[in-house]
Length: 83
Image 1 (tube, rainbow, N blue to C red):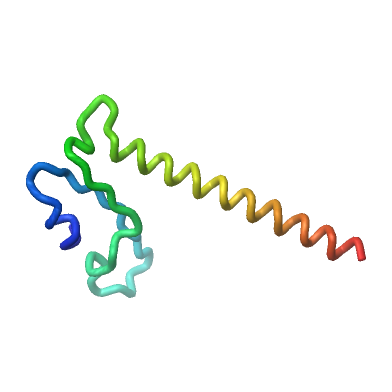
Image 2: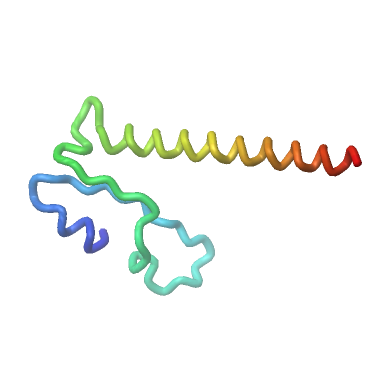
């Protein structure tokens, strides 16, 4: 848990997604900033679990952007091959 998460107060729950360092090489992985953080009262309270819903939105947007970039890359490659 990062310091930012500790400072949110007792009424808010903080949900963090941390980077996974596969294969080691990082002595203190928890010293790195989270890649995503969400803080809100009852953020993980069911049944809606707002933090999980927000994280899902972030993943969906990321996948959409990645697909757009891949499509643009393919179009550029096709245009380059057409010449």
